[in-house]
Length: 122
Image (tube, rainbow, N blue to C red; front, side, top):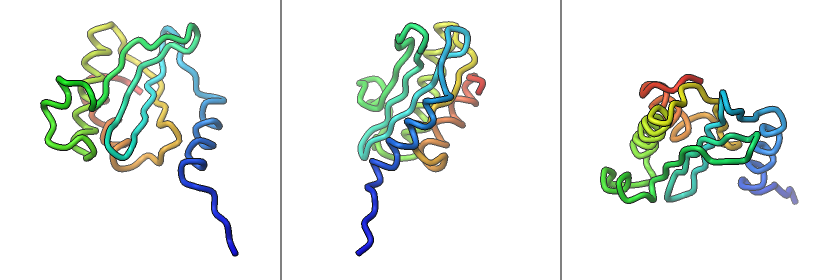
């Protein structure tokens, strides 16, 4: 019988490997993305001091009000524009993208592309 590691365990392992060389600084913080089955979360983090500078998620009232569903690619794209606008308001223009161990396709790609279009550089 073949035993497979669970998808979440594989993702956590990939994320741990990514974090070995991916780190956010004050000049170039880290845009960390997490997606669950129902929602998406994005944070811009300065890892040198361990502070979250900007955050957005599909759970927030102002974001949720604009969306029909919170678990679609369109919702991810909207969240990308929201996080980029918040970052630009705080003076953050360049970030390091941390996909959180998720494959760069679908919702993760939509969020990244929308953030780039809204003005973030990575």
